[in-house]
Image 1 (cartoon, rainbow, N blue to C red):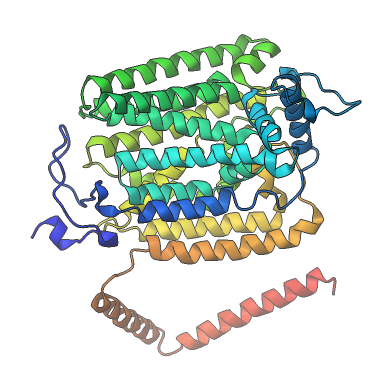
Image 2 (tube, one colour; image 1 turned 135 degrees about the vertical axis):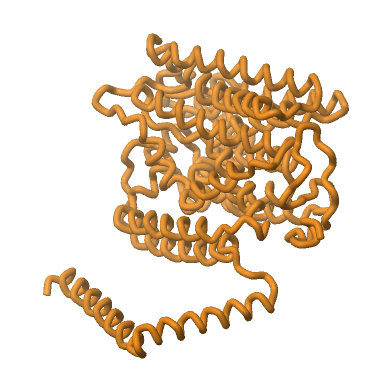
Length: 512
């Protein structure tokens, strides 16, 4: 009996022999189809969740003062002076074009908000809509990348993870501007990744993906400069392609090799320019080439500030990300484009962490641009977890433990929930604190209930489940016998002690 007979694929996916991939191993633990037999159900589910998270509704609350108000005013001035929207001019106010030093980042995000004002009028939702649509395009880019190199189910997992990560959906729903940056980097990596690992056979398909990658790189440069907007996606894909080739995999022809080499060379050049600016550049060079202001000496963060941001900016996925990374990197026998995708996403995360760490002492902590790569790795890990041979119970337990730790920190320090905005030290209003704690608590337990069945390696067949229940009863009976029938008294004593400790803590909090 072969592997596909012993372990039928999950989600009703028919088992078919894998297409021969040059350089890929002959055996696989799980066969996953990448053709149209999966249907568009996964894509539809991801689209519904994405629309609810990014677009519906974006005008519930007013503008966040002073952060969104400042961006709105700069964008209005750009619409008046550069786009010709004279109707947006305010008598007695400054209607001139803002300088880069005023903007503090690239102009593209402000121009996007200005376009919304010009077309839809001055309102909070009109300014946020272009950023939300840009973020939706980034989600499509991640879905297309994972679907092309893996399958649609993994792509749906990845897209749902991305749109529920605070770093991504909060910037998509606010007028701060970095939603454009995150989307641009995602689209650049999607275009370069498909071109490097699985270029379409027809020339217009190859040209389309290459143009998508180039458009993403240009948008990334216009939003956050050469280091984070260009070097992260291009160098990440280039290093992933290089590691893929060094491991003995062969590309799909000269187009694949050309795309991989071009990504690597462009990434190294962008990284070199960015590092030179960090070491020797003037404040003007920081704004023009890095898309960020030079930080003040008294507020310099450390190089590991990005990790601190990720712990709470990816919540609750930050609890799952370490185990997902271990699952993805543990696929040693897999070859072809799927292996290239794993190498590429991992390299993007590493490059993003390195460049954010290097630039943090100079420009401060900026929103992590490798968020989409972490979401892609999580999506692939959840797809891999459908294989009964993976044995992911330990991953589920580790994720549950980390989730409880993060939840405890967020309930104790609710201001940590604002770390995804990367705005220094904004404070959560007191009126929001109680509701925020309740949302974090109930949401975390809901996530825990969904995660344990997904990663807990639970038996799927009724006979296997019944046997597991009988084995559990036999184990409990043996444990009770070992305690000579006194196990219930031990459990009762532990429960009594925990209850007494909780009562004493409540009385102490009231000052009694």
